[in-house]
Length: 323
Image (tube, rainbow, N blue to C red; front, side, top):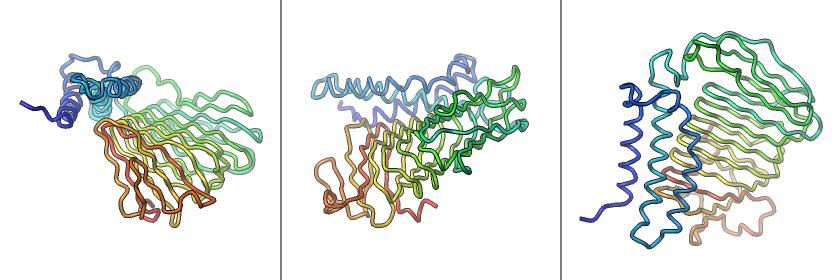
């Protein structure tokens, strides 16, 4: 009997993704431990590496099995978090929140900003002048954990008070338009909307773990790099009309890249386990695993991205379709 390796991976993924929340409900797995399953993402790299090392051998499927099993655990953690009853250790959803006093400060001309969200909603946009402001509401009304100074700002949700686990956190972050910002956004369950219009962002990193994020680069003064990673979630990126270099990696889930009209783009697709890409309808020329705008090398302003999809998908969309 011949086993379809693709179906084997999908079957294993679905079995584990469904089995994890069932095991939590039956008390066979600890909910708090399951909630941290996204931290297993390095196993995705190990699985991909095994696939390359064992290529063209009878043991080749091992790499895909490791990837599918890891993604199944991460997806199962996400499902558990959104379906457990209130009071469960991994719950992230509606509940009682209270507003906290706004936090403000200033940043130097060049600064690093790291924003983290664990179980909640994060909105990021341009503020005014050289000041930043953080507002919102949290379970218990506790203030976010804000550290750093004028050149290194870090914003994280507060620790949850004892006995409060159902409510999600809501943070609104306004960033200064006068600073050049190296931006790092990390989402662990929940949603994030990052609009960089009006900001100077030479470099941006976004990681989505069991959540949904939208990153709008249009209107930003961005001539540097983008590093985007999706682990058991979804990401929409509105690409800028200016030059951009970077990478997009999807490990279970999806990424949609919204392309500005008349943009010159090149997409170089790397090896991925059970991944899919959809770049049709944009007039791109294909050369092996590379898709590019005709005459790409002659354009002065280009978007050049490296794409990896493991049990996930990466697709293109018109800018107007992503509004």
